[in-house]
Image (cartoon, rainbow, N blue to C red):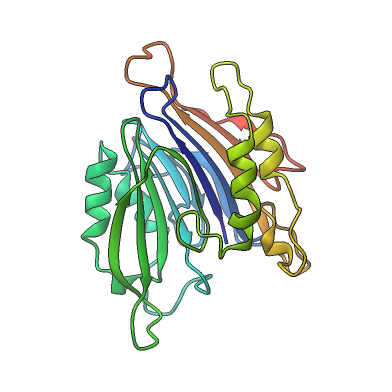
Amino acid sequence: MCTVVILNRRGHKWPLLLAANRDEMADRPSRPPARHWSDRPRVIAGLDELGRGTWLGLNDFGVVAAVLNRLNTLGPAPGLRSRGELPLEALDNAEARVAAEAIADIDPHAYRPFNMIIADRREAFWVRARRGGNGSRAGGTVEVSELPPGLSMITAYDRNDTNSPRICKYLPRFEAAMAPDPATGDWSKWKALLASREHDQGAGPGGAICVATDTGFGTVSSSLIALPADGLSDAKPVWLFAPGNPGENSYAPVCM
């Protein structure tokens, strides 16, 4: 169960801030964000070396796209395509709205259920494909919702769904935390939250935002992304990446 947190604030110098922890098996090989695809030279993203797709990426037009599993759909399924293809498909577009519409047109029965976040400086969207009927392993209808201003948190559940132990515990903490300041590089409050292993009694390690288990499954990387406003001519997108558990690994800028 990965986590994406978005602060959507139109009219601000930094209208979109995003934090993401990737939860995966530690032995699943991956590479840090870079321009890994020769046929997609405008895309910077992490590379899942098994599926050849990504969990999170950003293109040169300022579109960011992330994909998450939905509940009880971890891992691939025979006969279905990798959900890691979907952010790459989204990042072929120059605007978040067009990208979200493109994902809405996919065949959801070709993929396991998923959540996606697709955003740019002006708009942000949550794209959801829930499980199909009759016990299907594949997704059902793709639904696109525009994210409202303010804070949104996505896990394997719906947006800001407090049925998720992680959202229930950490959404109020993000709402209370001082927002990052990309201009000065101060992400301290969000970094501390992303590194937290605290979870409520009965929730288990998966109730924490930084997951550590004895099965090899846990938080394997963390990202912080900021998109500047159109009029902020001297500012560029910011992407900080921690290659591993964010409580034990430092964040460093991704080469743009």
